Every structure is written in structure tokens, then in C-alpha cells.
Length: 326
Length: 307
Image (cartoon, rainbow over all chains, first blue to last red; front, side, top):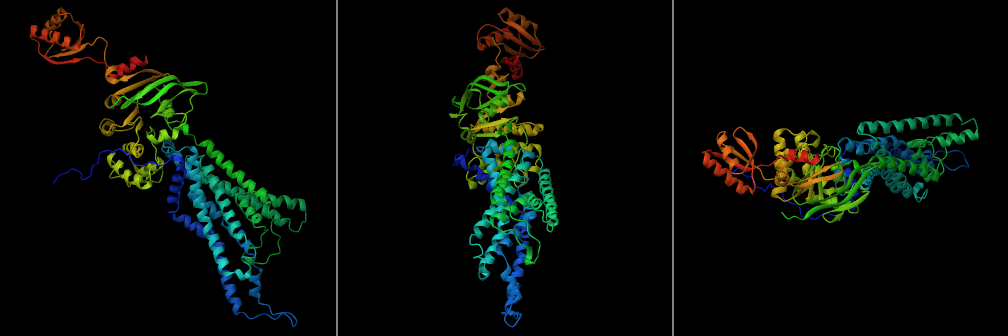
């Protein structure tokens, strides 16, 4: 029997089609999506980010079911009969549930960013991958836009599933309780919030990633930025509670602004201002404590844009095509 | 191969701050396999960067396959494959994913890129290891995968920066053979930048020597190795002073003598010199084992060029 290969293994020139090099950013973004969406940890984090919504869905489901079989409470001869479970359902402010959901999902959003985004450029730096990218027809703009878009879209998918699932559940089940009439633009506002959340996390991840040659170091730095700024927010939260009975309006005004001075604070602030609410206690538990008021929408949005732009500017400065050879 | 030039550089000046890396540099890079030689800091890397369209020239300009290096960087890079000196890969990918992705980055449709990635990896000798993560590869395999990612989109010009760096003798031999087959059998244009003159001599037909940002010399290797006056080397069966005396009588000059090897120079063409040599051998009964036109080593030619 001949030992020669059955196929022609010699080099053949490629004369097939080459697409225009104008949309190479999408090739890079698609590759990140392909790899990231296969990571199980992303979906675990997405599920955990939706834990508030899952708990609330269970509460609403059982409360509504039970309210139908609970006898009305008689409060007096001239007063109509009251159903306490029905009252609880009527008391629910639906848009506040999204503020809480987004607020409680922040740490999981951070972990998603660490898993998906923070290694993108740092690991490329370690493996000299820029030599591959930039020696092809793609340039720095394609590279950064592709990296950002890939991370952004992955985060957007991971972050959106719980909120949108809850929205779908709500609109199908609780229209009679004002889910839709409470805020007819809720879906659009929610989409806007998810996009800004994903954008700021993607930008921070890319910016920090570009500073390092090791994904782990970049991850540690991003986590440190998050937790240190979050520690500041917690301190402001403590100060806010301390000022509850004080009545010092100036101090409360300052604390109410500083409360939003962290990564998750910015997102929570934007959620409150977009949904035009100061929020209410989570899980529908009555609480007499005053909520931190929403910051001005434009200020919150502008700060998110500035932080994102600065992060991308850092990445732009750090990625240099001229270092590709030699 | 035709003599159409692959790239044409005219009066190119490139500066990094106050340092001039290329100074009024002009060259026509011919078809075929061209060696780019020069000492460290000579401007070879700057020339490659300029061909790739990464550097804005302070003056002058040029074209690669007719595309302006100042305006058409993307189009030029679509026609060029770069095999860099340093190890490089995209982390977290198997070889076939990496090479296919490199093809997509060059503009290939995804399905075509994947099909050709298998072909190119097979050709580069990585067929068996193509599903392994590139990070687990040995140095030799990493060199091969760099070549594969440079070849994936069927470039018209391949830039190889120190292609045998870090390879063991067998690996070096295999890599040179691979490059030689691409350039000589498949007629792909290649520019090889290397400090290893034997490698250049083995695979290239043409060299460009850059020193201090200026073109010092360029041409076919066989022309550069020629010695002025066409001296010839003669190897006899054994040393023969009578042969030397006879050939000097016939008008030749003995330039060098090492045992039974003689280098002589005589007026006329190498054919005419050979006739003189055989006449002297007949007269003295010396037995000629080898006769060849003497030439310098590429190293000597290079050292003379950079002096």
C-alpha cells in the first residue's frame, strides 16, 4: 500500500474572496461573544444577579394566590372589608423593584465583568496578540471597538435576562396591579439602564485591562476600585442613617450626593433618576426610614459617560500599533 | 519569476523625535525572496513598519503592490502576512481556532477561514497538534503557527522577522525548507529580516543591506559574492609547485595557496582561465579535482558593505 497522503498537502495560494476590511471590529466582537457566552460562570452570575427578581416573583405569586383565598378582614361597621394580602399587592411600586434588582445585581455584574472583560486586553498584552491583530488589516480603532463591543454585548445579555424576564412576568401577570400603567415607558427606561450599566462595566474593564500584562492583576485592580468605592458608599449610607433624625439639611444634601460616588452608586443613582423614584424598602417591607433621593438625571448620566470615556481613553493611549514589530 | 517590484520606496525619511531611523531611503523590492540585512539599529524594523503602514514618514513615500503606504495601510496589510520575531498568539484558543480567526481578521469569510486553517496548519507541520491550545506549544511549534497565521489569507508578500529564532538545528532546517518551498515552489514573495547570514543565503536570491538608515547595497546574492577580476579556485589531487610555476608562466597570478588548493587570477573570462589551468595541469601532470570561479562568503560581502 502506498504511504503517500491521499490529499494534496502542499501549499496552495488562497484566491478566494476577501471581505472589505471596514467591519473588522465586528469580527473581534463576535469572537469574544463566541468564547464568553460559553462560560458557565457567566450564566451562574446572571442567575445570581436575578436572585432579587426570583424572590420577588415567588412573593408576588404566593401573595396573589393566597389573597384570593383569604377572607377579608372586618375593620369596622362602616368600613369596607380589607384583604391584607390584597393591600400588599396594591402597595407594590413596580419600578422600585427594578431599582432594587439592579442595585442588588451590581456585585454580580462586577464578577461578570471580571470573567468576561478584564482579561481581554491584559491577556493579549501577555501573549503579544496585538502583533496578530494589528498586522492584519484591522487598526487600533477596530481592535478597541471590537473588544468593547464584545464585552459590552456579553454583559448586556447577562445583565438583561433577569430584568427582562421579570418584566415579561410582570406585564403578563400583574397588569391589574398597575404594572403597566404605573410607568408606561418602563421597558424603554429599563433597556436604557441595562445599556448604561453594561457600558460602564465594559469600559472600566477594557480601560483597566489595557494597563496590565496579566488578566489577574487587572481583575484585582478592578475589584479593588469597585470595593473601595463601594466602601465609601457604605460609609455614606451610614452617615445618611445617622442624619435621619438630625434634620441638618445641608449635611443630608451633601451625603445624598456622595452616596452615589461609587461604581454601583452611579448605576443605582441613574436607575433612580431614570425611573423617577427615590426607591422604597426592598421586598415590600414597610420601613419608616427616608430613602436617599435620586440624583439629577443629567449629572448621573454625564458622570457615567465621563468615566466610560476616560476608561476608553486610557485604553486608546495604551494600545500602540507602532510597537507591533520589533 | 518576473522582475516586477513588490514594493517601491522613494526618498523615505522616518524620524523618531530627533533620531532619524531612515534617511532619504530609496529601494525597489523585487519579486521573489529578499533578505533584509543590517546591524542592530540600522532601520530594518522601521522599514517593515513603514511597509505595513504603521509609521508616518517625515518625507518621501512609497507603494506596496501599487498601494500608497501613507493612505492604504489596510489594503496593504490585507495583502501582506507578517511573521513577527516575538512569540505571539491569541490566548485561550486552539491552533485551528487561532489561525481561522487570523483569517477572519484578514477579511476571509468564516467558513473559508476555518477550512483553510486546517490546510495551512497541515502544510506547516501542525496537523496533528491543531486542536491543542497554542499556549502548550513548544518554541518550534510556536514559530510554525506564526507562519501559519501569516499565510492563512493567501498573502502576496510575506514578511518574516527572524524566522529561525530559538529553533534547534532540526527545527531550523525544517523552517528554512518550509520557507524555501513557499518562495521557490509557490512563487510567494518573501522579505526575510535576519541576522543569520547562512539562513539568508539558503533561502534568498536577493538582499538589501541597510546601515544607519541608508541603503548600503542591494542586489542578487550571487552578484554580491562575486570577486572583482573573476579569480578562480583550483583543487589538485596533491600540492604541485610545478603546476604553480607553469600557470604563472602562462600569465596567471597566484593569489592564495592552501595545501592543494590554489586561487589564481588571470586576464580574460573564467572560461579562458580554465583553459590556462588545464594547460598547466597537462604540462606538469597535475590532476585537477575541482575548478570553480572563486566567490566571497555572504558574510564577507556583508562585512564589506557595512564597513
